[in-house]
Length: 267
Image 1 (cartoon, rainbow, N blue to C red):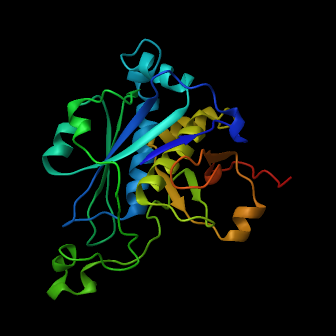
Image 2: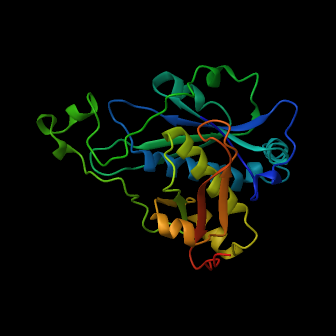
Image 3: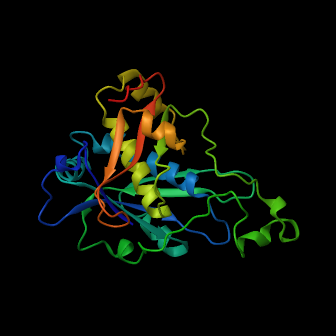
């Protein structure tokens, strides 16, 4: 799933793109037998992106800095790909950061690898073998379909702790997802990663808090606010998707805030 976002709002703040577009590719592990919940996958991907940007390799003088800097100078594009088995192992050989995050009882671990940005074509062979479309993870409110369900006792739902809510209660950064629009799993992953990146780069985040966040593995909590809260409350970070894929035009998809961050009053 491909996703563009504007560093500011409205969408006309988008910078000029590179002649050959660049993207940060995010590979997520896909396992039908041990499926992860979509909220856990979204959080793992967001953490992987921030960990990559926060790494010494991406800092000035580091081996990834030039690529990251070039990508940031154009449109901030992320492409989410699914991989399993051998394909997942091959992706680990590419430069990047992998985050593995536990889910509730019965569910598989979420695993995501954020890769150092590069041109969207040609792709490394390991990435070219992965798939973009059709990425779907269960929300966790109901047991997953077979063959995963067979792991529960006699195939019953009791083998799974049901619920779609995040388990990251102690996260310093919260990513809120719009209640106004449905998104595929791939789009959700990209939008949550966008919000986490903008939170990390936001000038109003205190340096002490940024350091604490990094020390805690850049943990994020993905939540779905009620419609009234979404419409009436502002946050320091807001993501507007360009609307080139799933939406019919520019759409506000996610936003982020952090501990002790002031809430911006609605205009």
